[in-house]
Picture: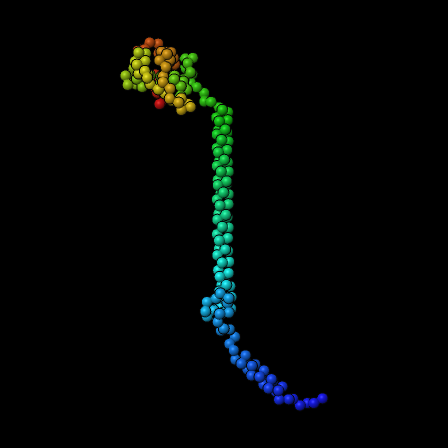
Length: 212
C-alpha cells in the first residue's frame, strides 16, 4: 500500500482547512438577514424566536395576574359571605339571649313576694298604677292646697279628663264612676266621719308621701 498522497487529495484537504478557519471566525449569533419567511429586512431567526418567547412570557404573566385577581375577588366574596352569615348568627343569638333574659325577668317578677298593702279601718291602701291610686293622689293634692279635706264635687271636677299610667305603661283616663267610691274609701281609710271633721294635714301625711 502506497503512503504517498496525490496532489488532488492535498488540495481537497487544504480547502477544508481554509473553510474551517472561516467558520471559526463567524460570530456566535447569526447575522444573515431575511431568514424568517415573512420577516422584515434585517430580522433573524434568533431575533424572531426571542420576540416570540418574550411575547409568550408577557401573555402568561397577564393570564397569571388575571387568575390571581379573580382568585382574590372570589376569596373576598367568600369572606364577605362568611362574615355576613356570622353576623346573622350573632344577631339571632343576641335576640335569643334577650328573650331568655326577658323570660327570666318575668318569672322572677311573678315569683317575687308582693309588698304588703297597708290596711286601715278595713280599707287597703291602693297600689300604684291603678285608678284608685290616681284618685287618692288627687284628693291628697287638693286637700293639701285647700288646708282641709276636699269635697267629692271638687275631686270629681279635678279628675275629669285626667289620666294615669298603669303598671304596663299604658295611659288611661280616670273613670268618673270610680271617683265617688274611692273618695269614700279614702275618707274611711283615714277615719273621716264628716268631710270637715278632721284636719287633713294632721291625718294624712303618710298617704301624701306614699302617693307622690
